[in-house]
Length: 284
Image (cartoon, rainbow, N blue to C red):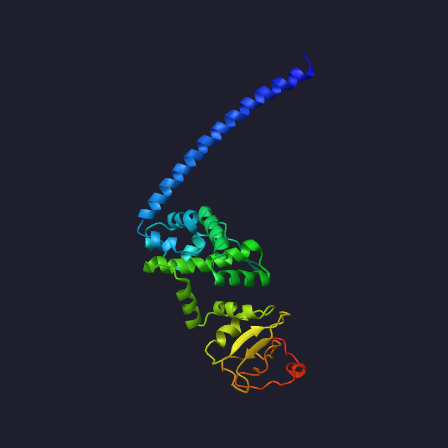
């Protein structure tokens, strides 16, 4: 048999196989479309549809998966931590000798963990605070997956509360509550106007109730506290701040105050840009 005849025979046999596989894939596609249609119909009729449908980034595919993962019996998860553990968002402490680490939780609902991972990733595109929170975790040294688990855990706390109260998610209301309760996450959005600055979580929360003052971190990551107030205004350091720290001003700011001790006085920075900030005391 000539070489050409052999090639023709192989082509004929493989073309039949390819046509058979295409027919199988077309059948599978129709079946998947039918599944999707029925899932959307069941989700639309569910009493918790509006709750899960309002979540940023969930969409028509992830919202039903989240609903099926949580179920309808709210007593199954008495608090948000129980839900986070079930979804694999809460880490597991590991200690051996001097080693004390936190590891990913493998004993969980794997399907729900994957759904929360995808949801957290998509939420960054629709929620400003979620995107800022993810960037903060990456700046702190977390990898992509670890940062999404941290964000997913925060979303699960929100979802659990909405689920228990049967309320829909409102981005503006959530950010208002963050500012009201002095959450350091709300400071992440405010720090976006100062590229390169990192928010110091402890001081942002501690200073949240102090008038006209915000706390930020130096771009070098040395833990220096920045407190900015109105030009000419002086404030007294809050009594609950015991760490000694100096401050680092952005170039477009003129005045600041310094926390020297638990009850130390506030100081006014020099007016000259080159003298605004000198000796820095690293945070302990």
